[in-house]
Image 1 (cartoon, helix red, strand yellow):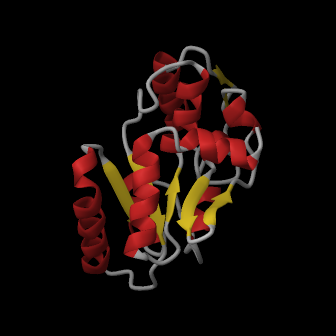
Image 2: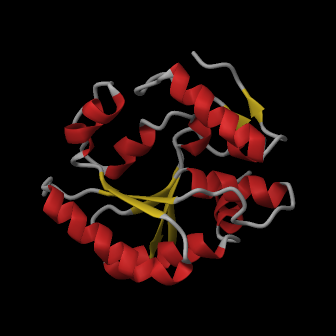
Image 3: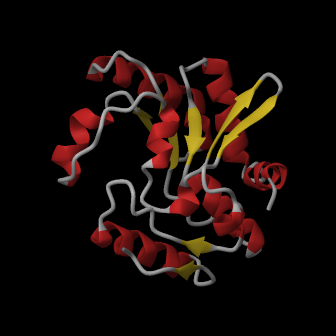
Length: 188
């Protein structure tokens, strides 16, 4: 799967297209639509399901050096107001402040990040290490491991970043129940 094929397929889910457009309009710093909503849309298209089948939420990363909860909460509210009409769950997270709450929530250390794509690099699975953002010229795409795993419906662990075998097994089991066609590789 090429970059352009990936983008075209991910945008067959109208929510992905609308959210990407809204992020451009809102002009959030270093904002990306990321992870499962993109990969799972590709799985849905490949398996002839509704484009939004099984997608639990739509993740948005942005990067703002203001790491206060109040600043992040203002952005969360702006995004929710902009996409409320879609009727989908949206998770908005400032990647500049993840290191402040992640260790307490997940029991694992988390380094300070310098940009949103650093957060994408730290995803639990390689097939979700993908982000898109709308630009005036089209789309930027960040996919450090390419598109093969997504296209081939392979779930592969990302051992380099906060890997938890228990979290991997839980996520993979949920996905396998929804998309029995996927191939889940063993955890690390």
